[in-house]
Length: 416
Image (cartoon, rainbow, N blue to C red; front, side):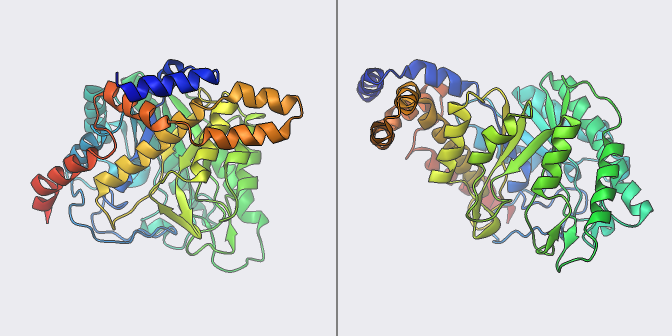
């Protein structure tokens, strides 16, 4: 325990904040790292295939993972630099088939056996996603809401298979898997008929979710979006559509920080939707002007998300995952930066003198509330974060990047 941490603890204690309680709460937070950051959303079904679905990855930084083993190796390296016990979020096209051609409506738990064994050996949880893009049957921008019944059924079957894989993962690891459905469906220009695609999507989702699965092993989420590349004017699965669907079907709603208007943040939505839903999924990202999925930084928006979770006592009801892909910088560092910043934001929120702030607000003393909120920004959370890293056995700020540089020289550079 450092002198700086002891002094910080005294400062926080003077405001009624228990630093040890904050650290204990943070230690229980599991962040789901996105597998697609490590290989630029390529997957292992069809290496070199086009993304489509409104997705675009920019940059060509050397060292991209080319195989499942390389991707797992990179995730392990990232986890060595992030305090806590975390999860990995897998997309369906990261399957391993031994070279056999398996289309997406025929995927099975066996195709993810090595991922499960690896996660079990590391005591990690896994989350899952059907991959409704980068496929010939998604080439026109429609999947579950497709007007062609055969194509629509293909994607229904894929999502059904994905839910079963999610349940198998959860049961095998003894840690609930969240299976999140996102589709790219929409029009580049304004459509005449918005009703029919949404009615088809609703019916398709009902078919996907018809099979009852033990919620101990798999929980379902649906993810809205405002717009994407090629769906600028109309997205079938909008926020309003999926909010109504999640409430009516008792599912999780996934709020992605990069899927709304650039001036709209998801922090205000958290308490709004949790008044009607038991749990939600958050995809923590950083949109810049549009849905660009930048590496998460310690912005006011990120802090606002963390504050809303902590102030509302929602940590047990919010599943946290990262969602971005940046190929312009070291991909392992991108994971580490984003995850550490999310954890920092949560720690800052856990160290906030919330009880005092709430008392001032209830008393109508809004001047003192604002003054204390601003004063709290300069409290020495950095010393507490350093203690968090020390206890977890990971490098502190200013030290972890040296390990990334070493990994780049000894591992990533050899992949060129």
